Amino acid sequence: MRLILFGSPGVGKGTQAKIISKNLNIPHISTGDILRKAVKDQTELGKRAGELMAQGELVPDDLMIGMIKEVLTSDECKGGFILDGFPRTTIQAEALDRLFDQIGFDNAILVHITADEKEIIKRLNNRRACKECGNIFNLKEIEGLDTCPNCGAKNSFYLRNDDKEDVIKNRLDIFSSSTMPVLGYYVNKNRVIEVNGFDTIDNVNKKIVDSLKEKNLYY
Ligand code: AMP
Image (tube, rainbow, N blue to C red; front, side, top):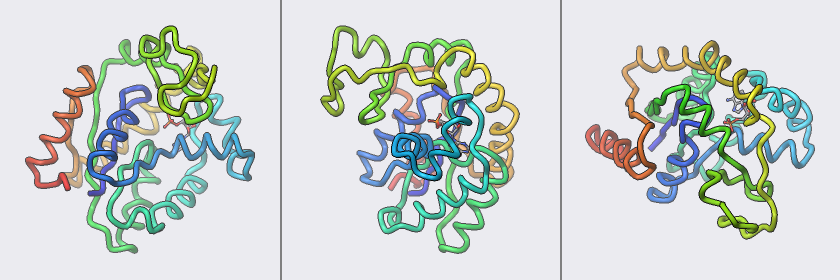
């Protein structure tokens, strides 16, 4: 399966991608996670991306397209993958289609997870990341904990720079202006499934899986 999880920052793409990835045993490719690791490791890509990410701006298309080409042509992606955070512009969507043609992959299906903006702002403000493994948690999930439930790191929770209130606003604006048009691109190609993300994690997952099964796309 080649799936794109699409939706506003904080809508739950990463959470859903992780569940589907585990159940189908296909890799979860999060461009945000790859970039955060590059920033941490101070690679060339990380040095160019860090400042833009901290301000909630998009990393330039040519860098992102180069990066995704490298990942999707690797052996681990041969049997399918779930993309989380890419494509974020129509230029990236067009490049992805060309890449699929070159590699001989079937068209990707885009799952649009929707949610109300007020709910999103609340969720982003209330989330914390682990600086070791990058896992995201809701404040309630980690209340009273001093070790990460995912990797066991001690005192590793932090509020991502781009989850701070003024940066959230910029990320949401950029989502509306630069990323939402990607949806139109896939709607025109009849490759969109829409799921309301304002529900429990399990219910959202069930809705995604049921919609994919209905189209014989869950494999
Ligand atoms: P995310 O974790 O998906 O919210 O991504 C965090 C940040 O990484 C974004 O706010 C952007 O600065 C950058 N980023 C991730 N994916 C992309 C992409 N496909 N195109 C441009 N910038 C990206």
